[in-house]
Amino acid sequence: MSPRRARRADESPKGPIRPAGIDRVEEAADGDWVVRTVTGGSADRPYRCPGCDQSIRPGMPHIVSWPHWAGGEEERRHWHTACWRNRLNRGPGRTRY
Figure 1 (tube, rainbow, N blue to C red):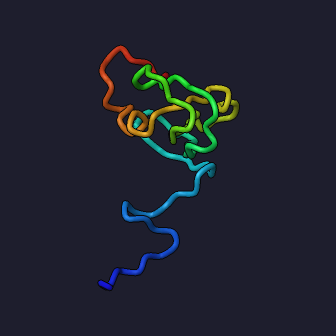
Figure 2: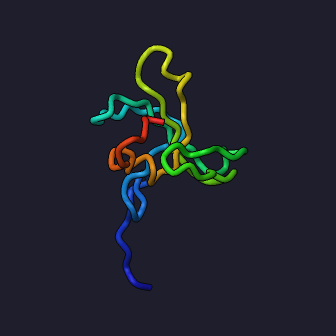
């Protein structure tokens, strides 16, 4: 058997694992956002991604975000993970949602 590097329980080959369903606050040029990672197993219906206007199929891991202010959870949106990361690169004329 070849030796392998031992990994900590909170690491994956792609980096540290973030627990799903735990909210975190992200600060960006477009404001502060509460962000939650949704696992594929807990996504039970389709959603429309505001970044690409395509469907997020049931069972697909994705991001849920809302503005970090009182009442911001009423503006909660479901995003593809890549669309969320690239939201600041969208062209002119596109709104926040």
